Image (cartoon, rainbow, N blue to C red; front, side, top):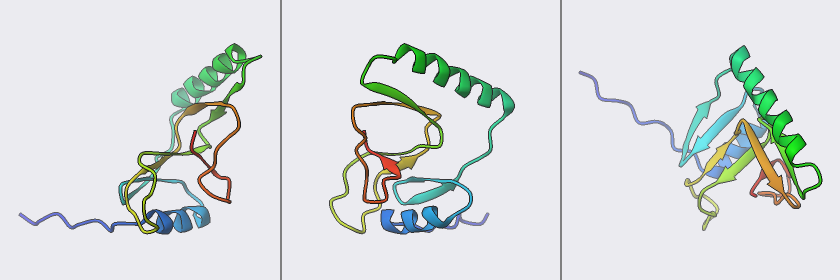
Length: 112
């Protein structure tokens, strides 16, 4: 039986450089990068319905809904530039309250 090959460990900086230039989307978890799969028609319908329903419920509040094309950073704040810990993902939807807080000057990754 062959031993599993270790996967490349990416720093957050390496991942963001690659992801910002890529045509397809990838998620990042603690140094590993995963290509995102496509969605089924049923999944698309569910996401659209949830965004619509939540959006109407949030009218008049400081909150709003964003769709699955919004990248979010979760996990511990980086302590050093070349750290490998954290999660960068594209949730099906997010509820954003108040002004967005961004990961960096690119303003393409939400922290809150």
